[in-house]
Image: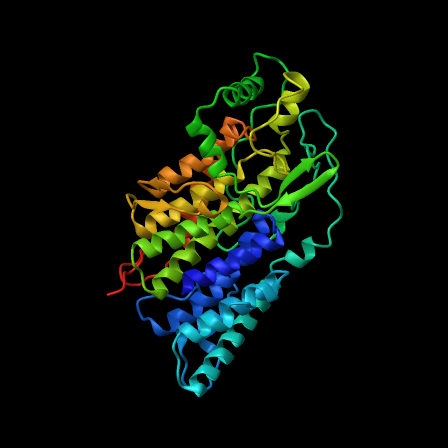
Length: 417
């Protein structure tokens, strides 16, 4: 049931075409709201209150009468997510069905639970309103640098910079957006013998002679929420889930494979959403600091003006690779939650016409997601490798700051019995 709620939220995020950083924010707050209610009824799990600065103490919110906690958690999840998306009506389409399937027959308990879920959602949304998101909506238009080697918008849409001020968003576990500032990228140079042009040439060469498997890997991890189709004068978008949505799907698949109960499942979604949220803040801080030019621009200017990458170049600077950062951060927390050798089958992309992929570990999945950006022609190797270092540091910080289970003093999931 909770898996269906997550899928409905993802469906709405895809419909509304949220950027990857903004999507991570929606996932995080909705999952915090649900988890904080479920732990009230589970002594083996710990609240985030006292672990994350400023988070409301849900236990202090008065409950009127008996509460069905799963019912209240779903209500809080949908109410919170609904206020953070544009198409709240789309999200609410299946809410009544899911709430009914909880199986609460007492009308007073049902009413009390919905009321409590709403109260928790209100408190989480009040906390969310202080994270600087609204302030970043009012910032000035991003000014592109005219210095050589700096990022400029790319074809076919030449879309303006996405979320250039995301490093102002309040993180959950990081001391600041700059905490895990990566090593600088190779210096821009047009010298064929320079490290920068060597890595540019690698992108060019590998994309012209890829195997079927490499092409599949690039397509599988594309996760472009706004693919712009161009046919003559006609432009239209193909909507897909974001990189964060892919990893939320993986978290859900892992929880289903492990047959976790609702609170343990909520914990898996929660820890993943936090890793995504802080990962995007860390990554976007570096993107708009280094403002590195994309391979497509360099290759078209200095190597081959007709070359096009397999994947559409995203509308933001190159360094570091966002997919490398958030995939590694997610894999780090999921490996801790389920085990480093947890095997799973990922069916996230089946609805987009791609086959299932089996992975022997979360690390194997994040490594494949990272290298897919080279195959796709949208990242240099340095952005991938340094992005994975950055993501692992973020994931470890999440694990250091947040403990979901008091049974063994670390957030490994407790299977239902």
